[in-house]
Image (cartoon, rainbow, N blue to C red):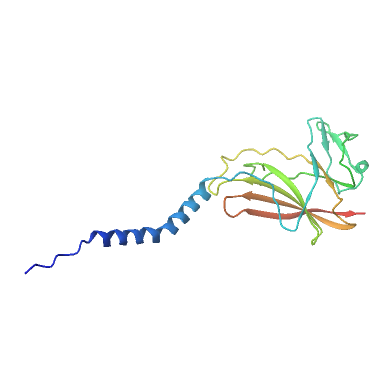
Amino acid sequence: MPQPTAADPRPRLRSALLAVAVGMLPGIVLLAGLAADALVAPAPHEVQTPGAIPVATSWIEATDQVEWVAGQPAQSFAELRCRTARSGATIPCPTVTAGAGPALYFVQALCVGPSSGSFSYQGHNLEYFPSRRTLVIHCYIARAWLDIGGPMGVAAVPRAALVVVSTSAMGPGQIKIVEDNRVEHLFGDQSDEFQVASATIS
């Protein structure tokens, strides 16, 4: 009389191992994503917000000879003031070619990096939010979560820049001007917004 033979356990073992591997796959993918976010910086890019209107702008830095004097935003270039970088004496402002259409002239130290002085922003772009009547200056940099930015050092005193903003998308009335300091990551950006000025558009 033939004796019963034991079933080969290898197919069952392979199926069990495959089920375990498939069950672990989402966790492995999650861990890989977290590791990438912690160690890899994405490519920096302009901020584009649904419902916002991109605003054409010119950004004119101070030089070693001429500094822009910070003041209230104005719709006339004639209201701007300049001074020499060394003595601080008042001098005529250099000629600036504005784009076609009405413009707002705004002088302030912007996008100068965190107060620690450990890094500066890589770029900037402006958007206007009609529903809030708010002009947002996005200052952005791309970094990994674990990038500490190198050793601390002595940060230079930021100099004000002249920002020439097209107001063609803004109706008459008061607007808020907000700076958005943004650190971009692969997943989840850090954003810090604060109002820097207000202006009246005629």
